[in-house]
Image 1 (cartoon, rainbow, N blue to C red):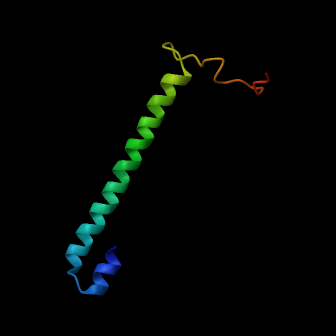
Image 2: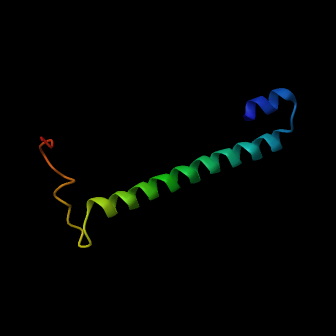
Length: 64
């Protein structure tokens, strides 16, 4: 995005501001998704005492 703005003749300061905004939004969305995934996974895989649930951490596949 920054190089495209520079090639079209935009101000370098404006291009830098846009690039910083894009990088910050990518960072924030990644941190939010990872935090949410860890929180939801830990609530599903562990009980209230922090002990792993047996049916989640099974060594053998479930055979019917």
